[in-house]
Image 1 (cartoon, rainbow, N blue to C red):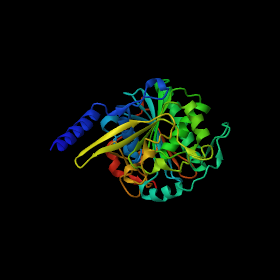
Image 2 (image 1 turned 90 degrees about the horizontal axis):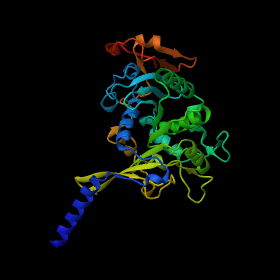
Image 3 (image 1 turned 90 degrees about the vertical axis):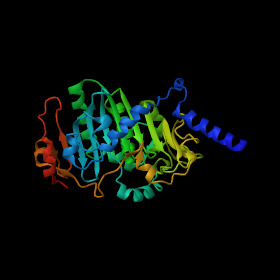
Length: 353
């Protein structure tokens, strides 16, 4: 009986003690970014919206995911690379006083094949102007050699013209997280945009330890959120005895995991060390779950329909649209002067692809 009382007393202390200290923070003097739980929950909603395939609802910010903590957001540029099934947007969040750049991740119907491919990805590209830094060409090219880069850069320039020199927050989930990090590095190194911060969800490793070191110098205000047994942050594999030749995460990781049993389950947000490969965070468990990859903070990060590379848009969006010879699409507007777009016309949408 005494043992039972002691056990329940311990569990009470554990759960309710943790509830008053949801975030396990490190010292702010360690020079790494401080995790902001509220901001992360706002940004994951922005990241969920980029999975929307109805371009009219996304462009007008009237989609079912465009509510809650993201209400009032104004898109400046929406970029769709039809060839590679990539999607991103640039817009302004007035309450955050920031430009948001959001990248869509790998589509869930192909994620198993993509994950299997990640096991075999090799470092095969020297990152420009960074000695010994190597990345995988697939992650690099998805941003640099598609419609993504020119569309995002143009959107940021337009937003800064309209709203001034405000901060830029780059976000992405899954492969979109890798693109977000490479985009942020590009903004700092090649476009001299000073106030850039990054938050990614379920991001894979991008490059080797040398790349991680350079990245941390240029984009120190970065948070990588990982979730429970999400398999993607474990890939491509990390080999601790071959650091320069192996893929290596950059800091700072925040690991979301559950403690308890039965109905007594509580989510802990652990702020990890500055190594990028903290063995007490997501590396302490097996990365074996696709479901943990598709849900962060209770928000689904996936498309609502299976054929999520299929694009739907209303005819009256044509005046905001430019396309290239490959059929890639960019929608642009000046939210400070654009006329109201008829939201009801979304029901008359036509298939663009």
